[in-house]
Image 1 (cartoon, rainbow, N blue to C red):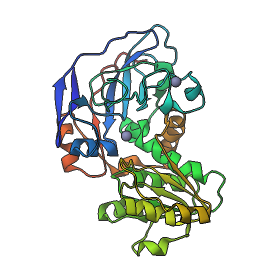
Image 2: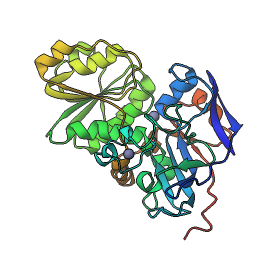
Image 3: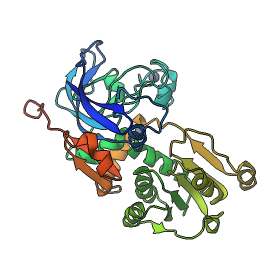
Image 4: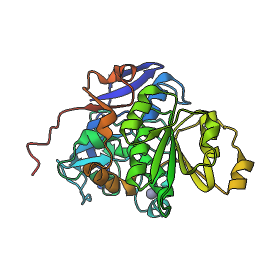
Length: 343
Ligand SMILES: [Zn+2]
Ligand SMILES: [Zn+2]
C-alpha cells in the first residue's frame, strides 16, 4: 500500500510501505477516506520542526472500518469513523481522566503522522492500524460529510476546546482571536461564537485569513496591539509569533483566560508580572480530543461551525503538492471500498 511520506524539506511523496494487519483482538484496520493536513504538517513539510524527514505524515482523518479484531464491539466493517491523532487505550488512569494525550499504555507521545513514541503510520496512508478501536474510534452521525470533519482528529477539536473551555461559566464574554496559523484561528473564531461569546474580535496580519474571519462573524481589528490591552475576557492565541502571543496575553482583562494553540517550539518571553497583576490564566497543551469529538461533530452537523468554508478538497494525486498551492485547510479524499457491503 501507499503512504504519504515527508521525504525531504519541501517534499511530500507517495511511497510503498507494508500493509498493516490485525495483531491483537482490540485492533481495527481503517482506510482513511478524508485526510486533512494539520497546520503543523505545513511546518513539517517546510522543514521548520524538530522532525527529520522519512516518515508517513498525517494525523487528521475520517476513515471507513475495513476489519476489526475479535474483541471490538463498538464498530464494524463499513462504519465511517473519526480517528483521533493520539494512540490511547481508554482505560489507564490518564485516559479515564480524559487525558488521552498522556495515555500510559503506549510509549510517550505515541501518535499518527509524527515520529514520536514509535511508528504508528500516517493518516494519509491507504490503511492504518488502530490499536484500541473501541476506545479511539468515533462513528460519524448519518449524513455528515467526512471532509467537513476530517480535522476532528485534531485541529477542529483543539479549536473547540480552546474556545469552549474558558467560555464555560463566563457570561457575555468578549473574545479575541490572535491569528497566525493557517486554519485553527478561523476554526476557533467560529467555535467561540458557538460557545456563547458575546463578541469575537480577530487580530492578524494576513488579509486572506482576515477575510475568512470576517465571514466567520468576527470583527477585524486593524489598530496597534496596545489598543487591545485589557479589553478581553478570553483570548485564543492561534499564533507561533512571540510578539503576537504577548499581545494576546496583554489583551486580557482582569480574571481573563488565554488559550495558546499555536505550537511554539522555542520559549517565548512571557509578561508574567503584568499577567500576575491581572490575575489571568494561560493554558497550553496537547489536546486530548477523543472525549470532545462527538460534540464537535454535532456542532458541525448543526451548522455552528463550517470547516468547509476554509477547506480545499484535493485528490490523492494532488495531495503531495497541495500545501504549496492552497492556503488554509486542505483535505484529501479517496473513494470508499466498503460502501457496497455495509448495511
Ligand atoms: Zn496536528
Ligand atoms: Zn490510556
